[in-house]
Length: 191
Image (cartoon, rainbow, N blue to C red; front, top):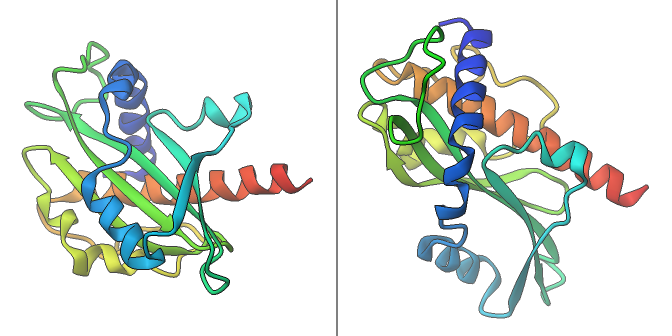
């Protein structure tokens, strides 16, 4: 499926699904364990203040700053968000009557280091009927080291998964988008 069509589907569903954002768990137990493993028990998390021009591009998710007392770890960043992949019963760009109840989605997080380089991607709540293969650690590991300096193109620099086309495309597009937004956010913060 064309990348533009998938981006359009994801955008339409995401904006429709916005009302469900408040019910999302932004600090799942597995994330807490992940941070404790990486930083020990001595870390703090604070939500980043997002300017309105960037906030309107986030749709479903939040950025956080993770601070540790370790000089080797220092400051890191975190994005926790939701990707809507389709609606129950299939995908159609002609259907503008999508409802939150019909949307299929997954919640995930991205851990970044201080240079906005991805350290880990984890899908922690997969609520779609197809494409669960994207939750595999081995598949998600390919995003480690991504810095937003190139496009993530399925079949070229992102592994395709037969039977999970929509989930793969939606994941790649969202990771690329959220990484570029974080870089923009930090650039604005430092200027």
